[in-house]
Image 1 (cartoon, rainbow, N blue to C red):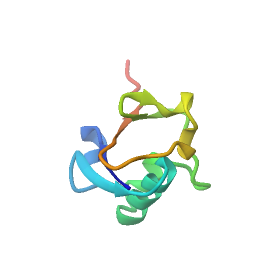
Image 2: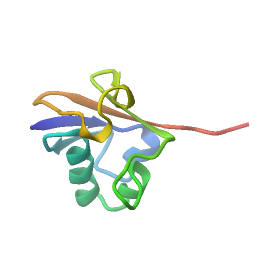
Image 3: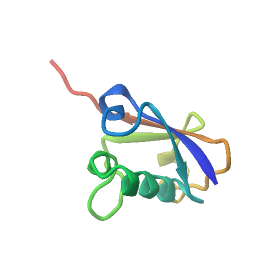
Image 4: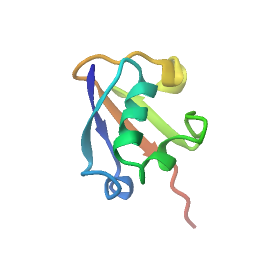
Length: 90
C-alpha cells in the first residue's frame, strides 16, 4: 500500500519536502520505510526500538492512531498520514 506522508515544515527539510510517499501495510511499516529512506528524519519520528514518541502525534486520514492500533493500524492506498510533533515555546 502507498500512503502520502504529510510533514510539518520543521521536519520537511529532513526529507524531500512536506509530502512524500511511503509504503507498507501498517502505519509502522510506512514510518519504517520513510526512516530507511531519510535517516536524518528517522529519530524525529520514532525511538530506537521503532516505537512512536509520546510527543509526536500521527493522524491517519484525520484520525489519531493512538485511538486505533498505534503503529499497527492498517493503511490503504491513497491514505494520508500526517505527522504533528509537539512544539514547545514560551
